[in-house]
Image (cartoon, rainbow, N blue to C red; front, side, top):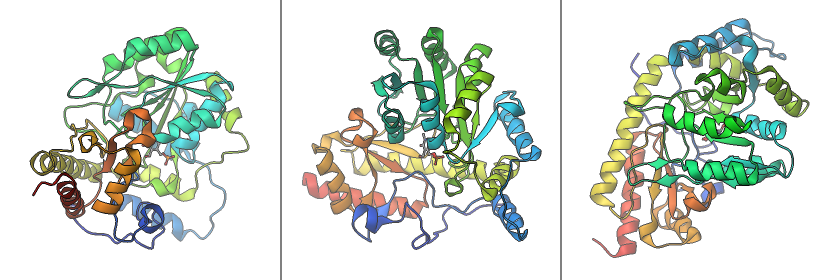
Length: 393
Ligand SMILES: Cc1ncc(COP(=O)(O)O)c(C=O)c1O
């Protein structure tokens, strides 16, 4: 089946967070390209699975069945040649919830937890929510991509006794798909010191040509014993509103600690989330192939547009994710000014870079998961506002 991602779908008044523009940005006419969901119709097999489940008239408490476990196991094997066991699989109502539970499980109050700034804002709060302290290991920009600073990482581990790291793989917002060598080096530093890596791989299937995602725990048995891998169908298949994610913990002792940390405060995902996840993993690939082509074309289109018409804003091509990390520093505005500029002058709703950490100051995050016409209109608005600001015609 051929999907039409150019189709405009009116999401206003559907409870969509992304499109709650009046509440979030203060105006009805702001075009939203912020929170990470896409304005595309979901794959037909997912809709069909939900419809079919809805036809059964009882919506009682629900467990993940064997066939869902099989679908997850098959997918990990098929995509990554990673053999996982059914007992390793846990379910949580979202990856953010899982990351918070993991910090509670694996770090004590007052401990340092490593994250790599600029990074998805809930990583910061997952640390502080649990009375831990952020050990920031900022990424370094090498001129054409962001890289990890291993020397600094080793010193965080050494000097701050940090024994837990939350890894964003692929990385939101900088769009890196970490290589095997990078992951190995990172693992040697953290796991070599007896630490644990919580790897948030929610963007792991939104990968562009020429790059390959590697689940952290799949690298070696030693890594598997000391890691927690969080995945979901939510970003890949555009179903984040179903609040369903999968946490894979190969080690029994770590699994027990995770389960005790979440006990009584975090339930299971719901009926429709399970149905959607299984359908996505079993039958979603036709849609996924098409959407990846569309997203990559949107990325290329945006980069070309910036180069030609808005050279004041710079970005490098991400290796994965549908997020572009826009370097707006040459506009010379402080955080508040930049935020206001996009919202009030350009009338587009982006994520403020500073919310990703101090290294995000002067940046904005743009979500290209939308029909080309919306993206084009947003870029036109930004172009107009920038020209006005810098006095260029
Ligand atoms: C890296 C990362 N983790 C987690 C999430 C959200 O996960 P969930 O909705 O499953 O809590 C996002 C959403 O943007 C994300 O980018």
